[in-house]
Length: 365
Image 1 (spheres, rainbow, N blue to C red):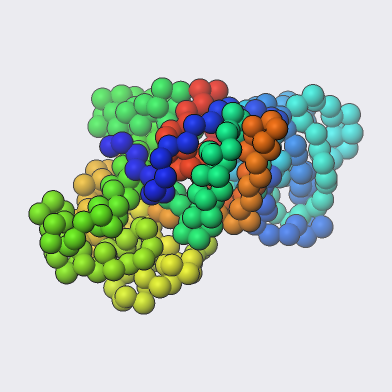
Image 2 (cartoon, rainbow, N blue to C red; image 1 turned 135 degrees about the horizontal axis):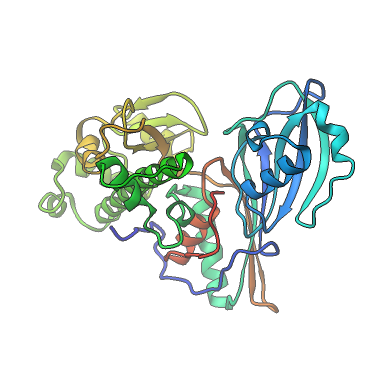
């Protein structure tokens, strides 16, 4: 399915290419570090290196295995990124002669535990796009206002699908038994890519339904959308651009317990950013939507075995969103913060109203 965008403006033309100068990521820790303990936490700045490459450099220098180094998440290769890693405190003296042109240790502190995957609150981004004319800059500012107010869809970014965008096909083939992948990391990555593809297709469908709901009457919609007129009328009455459907799996935002949308009070809570709706990462043991929402979700729920499923926010609310137009250079500069697991490039794509494939970027944000 072709990706759907919710913002109403026409596509905006600009130039975007990830680089250490124009794409900067600053990891936000999940909690303060204690200042004492058996683990040394390093605040690292890296340029033009993937997280895996950075870990290999440290493991080779320290004479330890990369898996013994703690980290919270992967960061883009074609960027300047700051993140936290942890090693055992006993290796600290070996860092005195550490030097690498792409890596700088910004800060050291101690902590009780090893940093583990997911131990981050989110990421702060700086992005510069180029070849922006004044008319486009005005449209971008209006788009940012809409995103501040209403949030944005939480698609998986192109980094999830590989250079050719078809990693999900390998994941599908692995699950069907027609392809074998001996590398465990790649095996898991390809299957996760297929989960992501199904999620994106579901989310695109939900945005499409929401846009149709705003454009046509419930009577007109009932002939093309397989939902009762009463449900379509309730969707049409919602002011938020993403229309909730009874049975949606909701979650407190930015974290919390899940529950099903049943009461109309949840519409207002969604508009206030107190809760958000979630999409399915198809697989075993995941909570499913119910009722009308399930009738749409089940089309994209094709994985019955081989991997556990989960729920992922379908809609997110970027924070501290700022934008500045540099007219003399024809640049537009963004600053914003996203929760963990979300893609900065998706925000750019929502504004551009097109996909911004960057062949050199391989990692998640």
